[in-house]
Image (cartoon, rainbow over all chains, first blue to last red; front, side, top):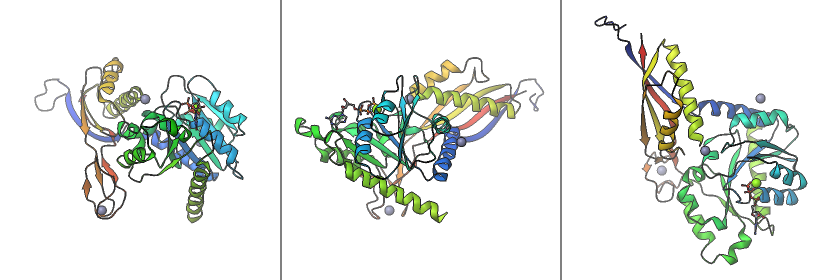
Length: 235
Length: 113
Ligand SMILES: Nc1nc2c(ncn2[C@@H]2O[C@H](COP(=O)(O)OP(=O)(O)OP(=O)(O)O)[C@@H](O)[C@H]2O)c(=O)[nH]1
Ligand SMILES: [Mg+2]
Ligand SMILES: [Zn+2]
Ligand SMILES: [Zn+2]
Ligand SMILES: [Zn+2]
């Protein structure tokens, strides 16, 4: 009831909320991060366009990586193909079939963590849905965001999809073996575009086909792992 | 398409807030969407019109404020416009996004009987 005149109209109450619509996801991501931290797992959220070479990079990584215990969670819209490819490459993998969802979120990853034994892993790759927009918005609890950008996608992609690249800790420029066939694409142009959207640009050119650049990528992962180990010992 | 999920969250939170205050309807909602939030305001509003039926927001007005991206140096706090390298010219530090990444429910106007 309106207190001024008692007219019976409802009172209008203004409420300041200032709450992120991603808060629920961020809370669940923090919980996943605790899971990873407790088990000493470095989780890498691997994103990129459909067909940018995400699964192929992981296959090449499995071949070249010695010592670390790897696992993967893959987001497949309808099939388990990527998980099957990774298992064949020697990486225990769990498929999350997302149906029509255009990205993974922290709740989907959390459910996978309870269905798939990750406790004994050193490194968990989370291959996100192939999409250059939505996956960037959802924190999964990962230690690092890595984006696979293939040389055939064109060097303007970072400028067109700044939301994805601004959150990337590393961009793997993939399929570099194709560069000789692409006279108009140069690594320098790709790096220049990335410099405009990534505050701390970091790129490693790789080819899953020839294995070029894969050792540098593995070194990058191992450095992340040492950093995370150092941090958890300090806590 | 994730705009749909975000609108579902918005409607759920709006209903929770409304019942906390004993409201029978929501009259107005203000949402801020940053330029670098990865949300298409048009899709967001379309999803809003689609999903609000049957909720306390069925007749509510939605105001979407766009927030321009603003980068800042973590050290000297200088504000730098996007377009060039995202690094402070003075301190050489990578810039931090100060505004423009948010998707916020800012405020609501509730009808309380
Ligand atoms: N020449 C060349 N082709 C590659 C390379 N890496 C991947 N490809 C090809 O690119 C296509 C897509 O590779 P995937 O590894 O399936 O890409 P993806 O990003 O995992 O794809 P989605 O998961 O479906 O989004 C396949 O036909 C691969 O053979 C590479 O280094 N060089
Ligand atoms: Mg794949
Ligand atoms: Zn849990
Ligand atoms: Zn989406
Ligand atoms: Zn500075």
